[in-house]
Image (cartoon, rainbow, N blue to C red; front, side, top):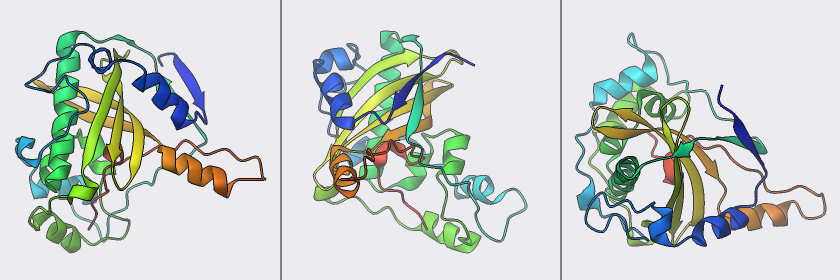
Length: 245
């Protein structure tokens, strides 16, 4: 097990300050995976979602098993008040470029409302965890997956403010902080871990921190009882809307 450092209820505003104090070119570690991809903020466009979609049957097998089940039953993630972030060594420019390219395309696919293409950029483990609500029938799940993509509205569109501190972990995966901003949901920070699959990187795990607005809301809710805003572990990617049947 690699050594880890503990983040105990780390205020997101502090983390944002640490990340955004670094110039965008430094945050991306000089990565230039494509035209404009190394310049922040990145405004992913639906047209940038090029990956081939996952097959519906493939996702159904991940969610319901090879023989099918009466209803999906993913294990829900708990919401602890502390999380651990793996420690690694700085990633090289080629690796950072691959990470930025994958994160950018995932955002583009969500902007396009194309869940099947977004899921193609996940490992099987993340795709399995990103399934429908417990009890959803296989028929309903298939109907959701077969529906035409529904692009996000302009108000819900997200910017990638920064991708920082990409490191190679002991198991060969790569982790990086991703800062997202949208008009309707504010600013969110996630630690995203990616796994190499052939010529590209796939998102394998996400540790998601509450946004600045979430911090303020939690602080108001906990006023007078000494409770600090919790750090939330999210299974959904980069706080994008969790598309469910």
